[in-house]
Length: 300
Image 1: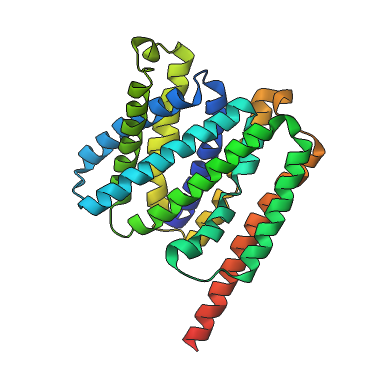
Image 2: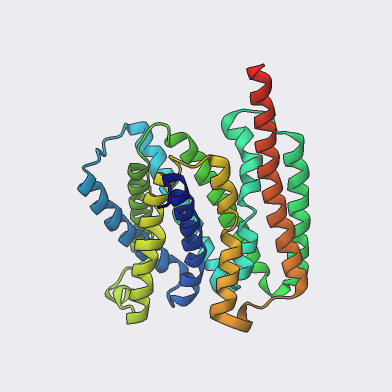
């Protein structure tokens, strides 16, 4: 029998694998980015809403928190829209390699959000990540728009995670997810109404698109959100962060298996991607080491 910690560690890897598979589904679904995200968030809101009702979780929040949740919902909607746009104009490999820079956007924005000084190694690692991106840009000239969109998506993801970093101490994570996803749906719906794109034809999806969309919204969104909350209760944030960095590796590997030569890139691309991923991992290891040293000094 597996112990609870091992079960949750395996569950964490499953969640990260699912997140890597999200990009694959984005490429398989024939819809453009905005309707794709609208369907994803709408269905996910329904699934999470059912879970909240089943667990009888209270949804009352203050006006201030409600405004923050709506802003965060708009940010995550834009993050997913730019993410899927990047996949549509480039490919899964380019998008996932570039979006892994989110950890460094967080490193540079975190001092602003939490009012602390930036440390030397974050600046150094940031410069190395820029070098990795430069290599990818040079070898992926045909994918420059996709790289730019993925960078915007990574920045939005970073801002979203920093906002949630504060919200999670005040509200149940499932409540946060429901409010944010619902807010994102309503904001996109408002945009579609204003631009007169919300018509009957909007709901005419092919059978395969409906199947992929249900998988994307249920397993890759609703389940992943609820399961990730459970995992974080028993596994350290450091382990979670390092494991999440495997998402691009899982996704790129899956993309090559499913799409074949369409995902095959030049050796330079993989060098640039490896530089970014290795730097992200090094950043996590450095932070964990310094935290342990600080804890030991405080104990003394």
